[in-house]
Image 1 (cartoon, helix red, strand yellow):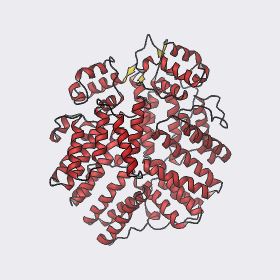
Image 2: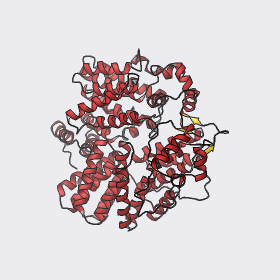
Image 3: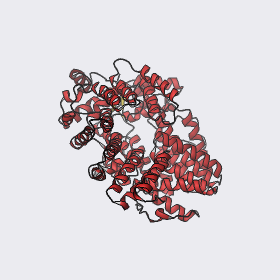
Image 4: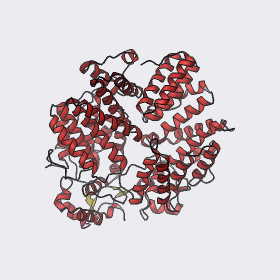
Length: 635
């Protein structure tokens, strides 16, 4: 049953939550509209369905539909904006927000609400906003769905993710407007709401990291530096494990700031400089904000490279405020007169626009007949299949919250925990692998492929890894030929497997195949031009693997020339892999006698290694530069 028959799902969720139609619909739609949805007289857009189900505290197991192609484009565009903001690519975020406005938010006020939220976040990140204007706009934005909310008592409310993020930003702006008690009231309630929520682990942890930033700033303002340090440092370590780059940089700076106030000057230096140089490495204006704050508000001694390194200038962006005159609806449309825009419709449209045959798209994933049924809305596929089909068409398929069943949710949460296994004891890791395997049914070839890939990377021998990775690849690409890669359509998982195979070849007798594979992957990217959300999933990792392989094979000139063949903006979207890229790239520059550029790249890599809790990499790089190039990596 797809979402366009969602009446029973919504009604059942409401009854289980013990909510009246008035309580469930408040701020989302009218009680009368909800009644029409539940009786099947009206249809509901994906974003409105999501809001209703989140408020009822229920995960939902059906695919999203949209009222139009514009509805999908607004939904997907807002995901792009979030990526840009996390990477501090503020101009790209602003341009994307402008495109969404021109689509009139697909005539949906929930998209309008999220658009306002992200504009306010953009304003704050720019360092050039009016805090009062931002605060007022955020309040108006919250009132779109919560017109009667009491900021001092919302603990019992079942909040959506957007509402939680709006409240987090309101709490932060309250600090800047000298309302610390309000900030504290909001953040304490948000922590309670999140801890009892049913959000997926990756989403919950990220929102808790954002609240921890606000709470730490409050505690610093109250001069409770010891408690602030404990919160910032524990949250920083968790963000490092989870690879949440945006909060990680800020939490690291706040950790260093607390150390400075507590007169632990060596630790302060380590964390403040790690945050500054990491932000500077990815061309984030946060480096500028850090240095300006230290100069204006503290007696911290800025020395060495930190004083001389160029930082990104602060840019003001035109603000957007809530306007009653904006005409958008509550996301309902008539069942009898309007046809929903399903993911099957989207897959068909994208396939035809890109001139991809059904056979090429579904190769190894499903039969051509099954794809036809999906495209014609006769059949609803499972979550992993539709994600794979969208990825082969260049879009990120893992962007819809709660769109699978309970098994999908368990698999993805457990997979996330297992991938981030640096701090997990081996016996626990083995149990997690066993749980993953037990969640997979014989027909789940895509989940089985992910599991096989994880298992392959734990093997010792490069030849064994290549053999097992190839086995995983052939599950969905039978008869694959690397020389014909541009004739295929590939998922993110398939591209990641190929990158790992290329990376392992560097330690084998067939080491020349490493460069061949990497060059073929880049040729595929150049030809198919995947969307930024999909590129950001695999290209940073592919890039650092390519760099490391070339360096280990002593192709120093080729390593030093890599930025010309990679999109370095995308490389910077994942700071962990970018730091590893710089680790090898800086040494290759040194081998090519480009010593000043080598030193700059090495300092950035050193800082990112400290930031991401890899001090052994930082120490090794410092030793290499001292021994090989007689250069001291002095901050």
